[in-house]
Length: 396
Image (cartoon, helix red, strand yellow):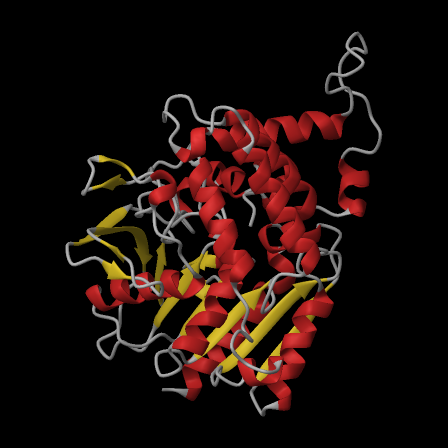
């Protein structure tokens, strides 16, 4: 759900720093776009046409098509999961899972074909509320159809078929991306050999729902929102920034905030209601930075899709819902994550095991909270590599 900025990572773990250190070692990414004139029919029955999907790929699809892996981004992420856009790589920021994707890494591009697309409803090249509605010639805004996690999966499936892929060795992602992986396995079991959901669970907790609601309210109560019909040049910046600040609090932990900020003051105390504390300055920075790259209506739509997702929907028990997942799974959680707690993840793993599924689970010690899946790469990269090797060997 988060895009941790370089100043919140240990220096050695900042992918943009790594890119500057060893430019010749970086993957070079290229944004691509697929446009489907026939569009996509949603779960609601409404149709989005044309449908545009932004994506990136790494590695080579094998002749048998048995090495494809779909990487799915978190709430405010995008298709840029690895590499840099400049071959020189002196100033480019690497993709959000770059330490895990590339030659010899956990998602080894010498062996696997990696695909990552911007989610339906997003604002980084894929159709969403910011897109032009061909029926009116204006932006959809809040007239964009309601989307679900299954709709996001259906759009991804359409892209994969266009790329000549008919089966996935694995689907993996963190946070909302982990939910996406679960839905892939539940909706299309014949397509999916394995999943690796990280820092996620089968549904948001009531506390998670509450935070999402307040974040949306911050946007929708901004006078500049105008019911979603705001001028792109004058978006509801204050509301969107506050929503991001709230979200960032949920991504961190008490331990990480104490270690990074403590109660240290920043600047003078001339304005008693200014951002005197370092943690306040950090949140202001995150809010301002986020407004520069993300669409407010997309945030509303994607958080709602995440809220509504429930692996047990239309089933009497969690076990019945989980039973739809038949593939092998590796779950990873982090002890200080209080947005998707290890208890929530373990509950889903136990449900899968009760119905006889092969579910491996690791709870990792970390002080980084929910952000750990974007920070603590060395602590779980070997788990990914080992699991993928087992899956690949099992099916080959």
